[in-house]
Length: 337
Image: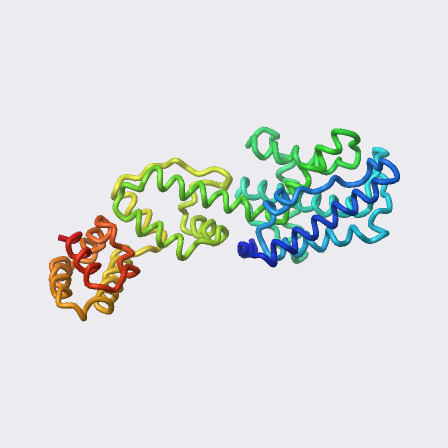
């Protein structure tokens, strides 16, 4: 999986997309003035288009694609096997998205079967092995994972879109647009991360180590691909289909084991927090005589785990961002007593 980074929407990016969509819709309306042309693509809704774009590469691809529609040759016609007509622009777009949609489904099937993703370039030996595995699977019983059968049915439907017409063709065009999105894998992994974090909160937020775990994951593994690969590589993913997350509930000792399996050292995290917090308080308040009282409190909590719990139980983890004055220092001391 490639490491796609979320797109930062600013005024420039927003204007670029809004202009491309507006010009595209304007061109559609111009072509409809003289006569009704059923073969033309539908006008686009800006908010819907924006919601599908997650990366800079995808923004560039979409805007470039919309601009191409203004070329004269892009509105020449292509006849489908069903007899229906589409513009060459939309036909080429659908064919590319159809190919991606089929690849996405095939990738999911491979995951469900526990097989590695296909390489873009394979040696002769690898191609032969792949062919053997495919033949072996064809010869096996057709009974098995219902989701695999569903995905195989999806591939068959996608391959036959040129034979459809009318309402069925219109529905398939929408389906291809959704399933063939280049951000499909990104959305799947993003969905997985969101569900996993939600499951952690629902079942384990009361356990010791939860706060450190969430902070660590949000800092180190905010990218959904990185997060998914972490869970998969450490054997904690619990699933093959990444649309679903296990509702497994840990007891405290099991939760400690789970955290350790992820390569997270709680004592190290808490020790670093203690050192950083104490230093920030010293930098801000050591010039006040009341600081000695705060230092005494710190001395009573030398254990990093106890210190971590004290600060978080008093909601003072962000104290380093508080005002640098005597009254604020007194307030911090009072809350820690």
